[in-house]
Image 1: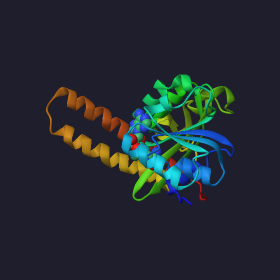
Image 2: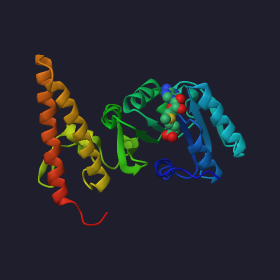
Image 3: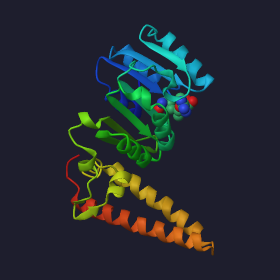
Image 4: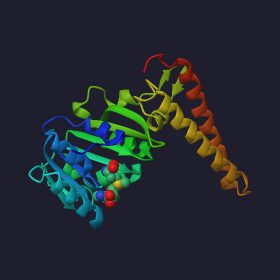
Length: 255
Ligand code: SAM
């Protein structure tokens, strides 16, 4: 039986029993195979755009003896899914802009889908912006660290089925004595900021380090565009520092 990494296990735990899922960019099909082995899903597609991972997925499914439940399919994004075929789509381990472009290109396949579970490696804000623009609403966000990397996992449902609308989720508000703009909530996570955990603080400290390095590079240039970019970045860094300072102070004692 497959044992999943902490990251994939967190995604697996968000799949409702009895689901029909498409795991896009499945690589070795670990997620759908795990879900099928445990009888959690009724049907699964392991979608892959590249031949190598597609064959690896097919082999995994065969060796685990779950071919009656999971199919490996070769194709770009949601092209491997027929309309109405699945209710849950998972896309993990890619950049946020690629995830957003896969969702955008496959919008017609999402009518029957009632849950998206997305794990961008970077660019989480681009995924949140796509969800807002396409009337999907987050129901939960997770953040975890594994093997020195920090991952966010976002779970969304169609906005009409959501308890909390996007207007409310991203409404600028005071949290822990600091005002968070819509943009800041999109960047930092509307649920993650409400209950910030240590790894979330660590992620943003690391982001600040990266931004500081970019600022230093920009500082070496005399171009007005570089000055302007550096100024913008410094302003954003000050805003992030203020959020971290206030939320750190306000952090719950339990996690
Ligand atoms: N989802 C697995 C995970 O999270 O462990 C594998 C992630 S792996 C880093 C990304 C996979 O996505 C690769 O196997 C790549 O071939 C596949 N991929 C990238 N773009 C894709 C697309 N447009 N459609 C389907 N698969 C894609």
